[in-house]
Image (cartoon, helix red, strand yellow):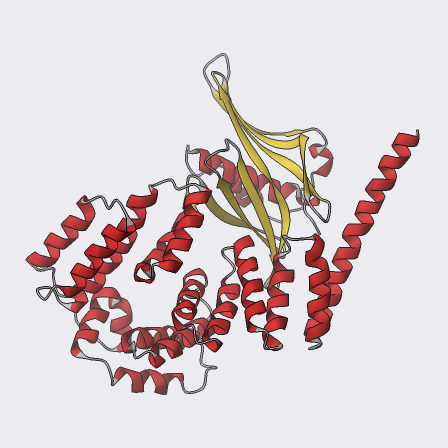
Length: 439
C-alpha cells in the first residue's frame, strides 16, 4: 500500500509539474504579446530549463530576443527551433533577418531561400529575399522574387515599381536565363518567347552530369568551377546545368535512401558549401519529405493540423516519430515516440508506441501501442488491420469530423511500400487517438 501511495504521489506530482510548465509558457506568451520582452525571455527560459523540446518556447524566445536587439541569442533560439522542427518556415525567415542585421548576407540568403521553399504563400518571404538580392546586385534573382511576392499580395507598398526598376538593370543574358530556369514566370513577367534548345556542348555536359558518379564534394565543386569557366556554353544553359549538378552531387554522395545522420550532414554541407544552393536546399527538403528513412506528412483534424516526421538512424531498426500540432500558426510537439517493424513468414507488424510527456522527458510505453498488422490467412488471402494493444482502446476518440469516405481513404496505403503503411498507421493514430497527445 505504501509503495502504491508513493507511485500515485509521484504521478500526481509529475502531472502538476507539467501543468506548471504549461502555465509558465502561457505567461510567457502573454508577456510577449504585451511587448514585455524581458519578462517573456525569463518565462520561456524557465520552460526550456526542463522542456528542452518545446519548439514554440525557443521560437518565441528568439522573437523576444530579436526585439531586445540580442541578435546572437535570437539566432541561437531560432536555430534550436529549426533543429526540432526543420519545416518551420518562419523560424528560417526570422533567423534570416538576424543574419542580415549582422551583415551575414550569405547566411541570410540561405535562410530566406529555405523559407520560400517551405512556404510559397508568404509574400514577405519573397520580398525580403528580393531586397537582399537587389542589394547584392543579383538583379535576376531579385526580379523573380519581386514578381512572386507581387502575385501573392498587394499590401507591400511600391513592390511593382521596385520590380520594374530592377528589371531595367537586367542584361540580355539575364532575360535568356529567366526563360531557361523559370519560363512560366518569364511569360507572366512579359519576357515571352521560348527557351532555346540545347546545343551540342550543353547536351554533352548534361550527359556527363547524369552518368558520372561524384565521389566527393571537392570533385563536384571542381567540376562546378570548371563549368563556370567554359566559354562555349551560354550563362542561361549554365544556370540549368548548375541546378542539375547540385542535386546530382547530393544524390551521389548520400544515396537514394539517406538516413537521419546523412540528412543532418547534408544540411550542414549545404550550409557550408554555398555553391550547392539553392537547388541543394530544395533537394534536402525533398528528401526530408519523402525518402525511405526520413519522411513527413500531415493530417487535418478539426481545427488542428498535425504534422509528423519519421526518421531512422543507421544503427537502429526502429524509427523516431515526432508529431507537431499546428493551430493559429503556432506549432507544438505533442507526441514523441518510436515505431518498430517486425516481419516473419506470416506477415508484418508495424507498431507505434504510446508516449507520455513527463515535462522533462518522454516516457515510451512498451505495453501500449497501435499496430498495423499485415498477415496471410490459411487460404492465402492478405489481411490488413489496425489493432490497439494494451490500454489504447480506452484512448480511442473517433470524433474526427471527416466524412466516412475521406476517413477510410486516409487509412488505405497509397501503395505497397513500408513508408505508405507507416503513414496510414500515423493517420489512424492522429484521427482516432488524439487523447494520447499533449494538450
